[in-house]
Image: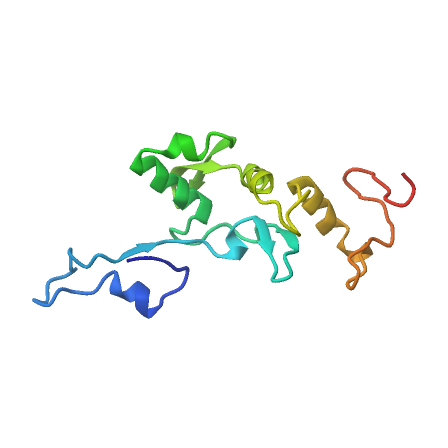
Length: 163
């Protein structure tokens, strides 16, 4: 069993349970705890139940030994021998988490690959750049129609209503 949990839980506690003989740690427990980062410790997209996507920015650096999910997946793929295949379409970054260097796929590239393969309502055309611009301009969007009431993007200078 693999548990990726950011907070202590009963499942997480199983990873360090002593053996029946009372030894320090049960080496045959077959439970592994992965230090997954929370949504506040990583950036990327979040998909709502209505299939709309939002870009979220990292609020704080990962605490303790936490690592973002996509970094954990890359580390597993590397150890299992298919890391290059998993990330062949991604720009790879060298990032430090908890004092250790990790190979990190660029999160924007992951979204681009999802969008190339998932042709469904909500995902089509959702580039990282578009989602980031939407979050910068969120105050100009009508919450019911999700249409912009106008405004100028402070980063790109793009004015939706006066092209």
